[in-house]
View 1 (cartoon, rainbow, N blue to C red):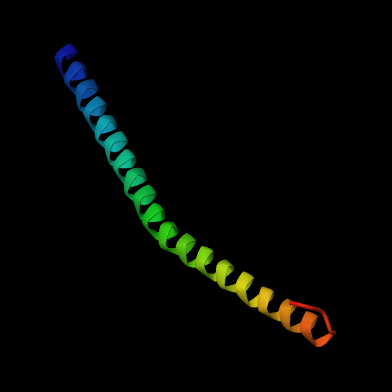
View 2: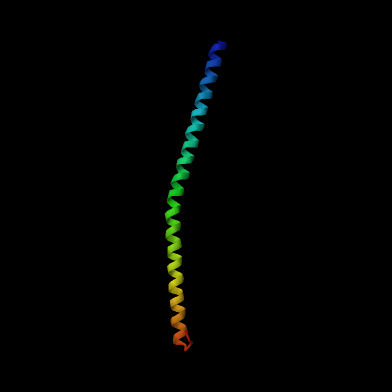
Length: 71
């Protein structure tokens, strides 16, 4: 009887370790997925903001020249 209890406890410990291992693997996978998704999006966002800055500068230069300012 004592042997059965000991074996049962070891089986539960192994299952607990398996679940912890699976959970950590899932977390690492999700983290990698998020990282690989965010990196390209951040590059696109940076390029978009750069383009908007150029357009805004051109608009301001156009308004300035229309109002008679010097370049």
